[in-house]
Length: 471
Ligand SMILES: Cc1ncc(COP(=O)(O)O)c(C=O)c1O
Image 1 (cartoon, rainbow, N blue to C red):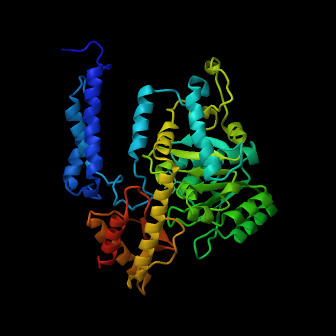
Image 2: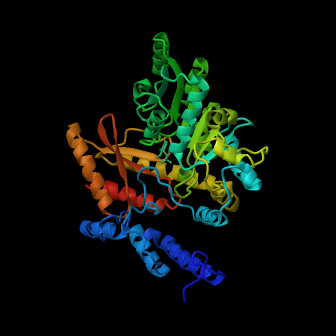
Image 3: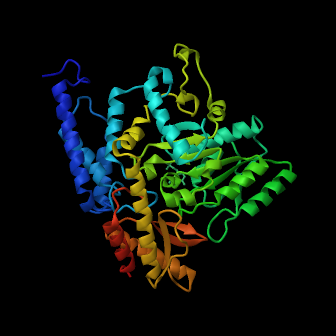
């Protein structure tokens, strides 16, 4: 029988639909350790993948299909993928996808409160503020009064930081503004600069020391030369964990330089920020508390599902001054002591983002996150020590965080590059773990990054075994 309002399932149907989805998802999580690390073409093969892509590219039908059949289609699309939620995922910067956070997202989407203007759901904004204050003050060590906003990821956080820096330091005259990064800064920084109108030739790439950290003395010289040439240095970006190797720039030295030169000091801690919850991380990331703004990514090192980043700033008023804007159609929304996130970033309408961070923190407690991050640091030390013992590998840099970078040893760099690529292919072909690579000093370099909350000693040992016995 046709339903009168097909977009509104009744209670029994909602429960049945929810159970169907939940059962599948719990099975999925249960099976993660056994699932292939990369099933992009694995079980399917390339032609079948092409067929699947074609099949799933079909437009929507005029009349709806059965949920069971649609879920089966979704499953097939999910299966043809890197296993980014699994314990063997050591590539790029893993996320994980904490189940409790996904539950909070589902809850958030169903109640569908407006996350952009505080007056529409003030207590939810207060709750999101509690998360932001914790990140700004407890995690980053910024002073009282600091705050910020949750974003969709680190790239958007870097974008808003650069908008704030440009507005605060350059005003409307941006053509002669120069900013300072290293070659290992995440590419989202240069991308953000381009989006906000900073010309490519105004982005100075500061040299790095042999241990891949910003050469702060060189940065000072570049700034002085730029000033002498009549330019206006306005921003310096330090990495608190580069994507390539997890290396932390000398934050206190960069802070001193920024202070002396009156530059905006942004720390991209998308990878490293939450390691400040651990004792080792707090020591290695000292100086972050001196920043004007810090990017963090809960969807990396708080293990949340993709889609949650954070920007925290020393003075939220500066963020608001750079992003503020309103329209007559918003006049009925009263003003509160709480921030309107729409005025701190580029987006107007968006969901409440706080619950998917707040629920896991309150459900599991901060200690659970601290312990998980400590475990990742331990596992990285174990991987570093083991790979260092392998006679045919070069493991040049002691990890600051949880990335071990290594290459196949060779007298001829071209051979070394070819052998390193071949090693990556052999390890990944095992389909038990998945690693990725980068280029450092022009040399092919493999990276093993231990971040997923589901990766424990057995998977790290398996990865070490595969790397050292893949020859
Ligand atoms: C250091 C760093 N900054 C920024 C980003 C960009 O973050 P997102 O992918 O969340 O946009 C990344 C992503 O890996 C990163 O490692």
